[in-house]
Length: 283
Image 1 (cartoon, rainbow, N blue to C red):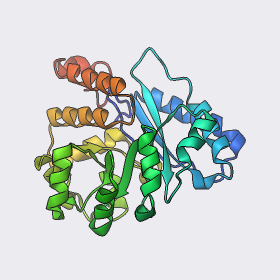
Image 2 (cartoon, helix red, strand yellow):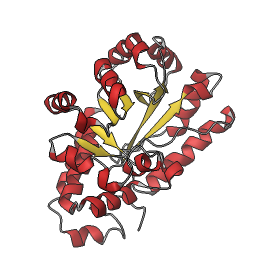
Image 3 (cartoon, rainbow, N blue to C red):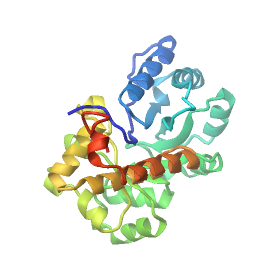
Image 4 (tube, rainbow, N blue to C red):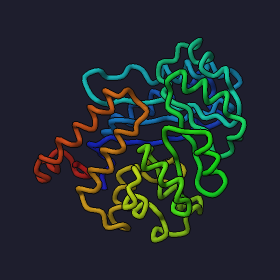
C-alpha cells in the first residue's frame, strides 16, 4: 500500500532521538519535514521532550529553524508539541524568549505528575496553546479530567467511566487513539477489544494518529487500512474520521477549517478520479 496520503495526518510523530547533537538538529528536523511533505501529509505534529537537551531554548530554536519555511501556497502545516512531566510555569516565557514560532501545544506525557501541573497548565492556557494529556485508564484518566485538556491521547478505559464519557460528549473534546501503538504497548490485548468503534458509536469525537511510527512500524495510511479491516469501516466513515482529525489539529482555526473543507470537497468527487491522482489512500 502506498504511503502517499491526500488527507491530513494527525500524527504525534516521534520524540527526537537522544544522542542527536544540537548542531545536527536543524537538518534532522528539515529532513523530517521534507519526508512529511513528500508523503502528501497535510498536517504533522512533532513532540520534543526538553529533558533530552541541556539547553532547551537552543534546541527549540534549532528545531524551529528546521521546520521552516511553511509553504504558504498549500494547506500543509505542522505543529511543534513540547512534552512535559512536571511543573514548569516558566515554559511560556521560555518559548517567547526563544522566538520559536512552531510551538502549538503542550503534551503531558505518560510519566507526568499530573497533580503537580496546575500552575504550568494555567500558564499554557494563557499562552493560547493546546493542552494535551496522555491517559489510558483508571485513576490517571480521572486526573486528566481534573486537570483539564483540549485533547486526550489514549483513553482506552473510557468505556468504564460513564461520567467522563458524558463530559467528553458535552464539550466535544477529541480523543486521539493510535491503535497499533496501543496494541504494541499491550494497553489493549487485541483489535477486537479496542474501544475505538464503541467510543465512536457512543458519540465521542475519536481521531486517529499513527503514534510513534518508527517504533511500531506503521503509517497513518496503514492505520486507516487496519481500522477499516478490523472494524469494518467504509470510505465515508474514514472521511469523517479525517475531518475530525483536522478539527482536532494543533493549528490555527482557519487552517483547521481549511483542511476540513478540503476533505469535505472530496466527498463530492468520484472515487475513480481521486484514485487517478495516486495509488493508495486517495480520498
